[in-house]
Image 1: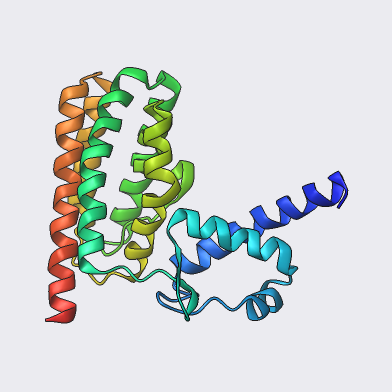
Image 2 (image 1 turned 30 degrees about the horizontal axis):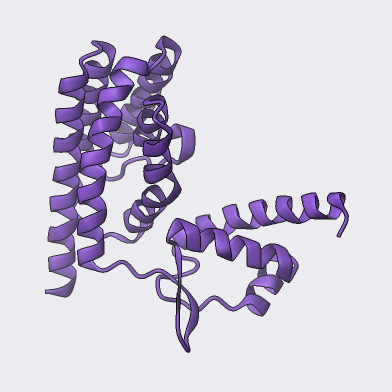
Length: 224
């Protein structure tokens, strides 16, 4: 394989990885569904080599799991696993908020403020029935994590936990309160602007703890 062919394959693998991530999060590849390479190759119009590379990347993110005699499947999140994910998020995102209060640039603060304003307009326009589920640089939590400047935190939260949480956001029937989430985001933002790392950490931990309680209540209701 030439260097050009290798680069093309890696590029294709990156592109199909992004598509697969989005389809898993949106439920187009449902939790627990089997990963069939021939089927996915036809579906996405990509060769088996880049597809295998993409599936390996998804395994690294925790979105795909392998079991003996079963093969690769989309991850299924149990109540216990979700509870563990949110416990880790509560601790690590609290640290990220504290460090972001110190390291965040003024430009990043302006961007985050504009994001919150757009969320406020969205919540008002939809009468609080839905909350903008943005991703990447547009996501409130993601921006704060990135702004912490802590590479290990960024890896731990963004490479795996971030996508697992987003799967649940799309599949959850929890009674989430978007107005309350927005208020909490605004409070965290004020602490970041004030460069109050201690308060930012406390508020972030409380924010995620509330989300965790809502998720656990939703799971109880769905399986009760």
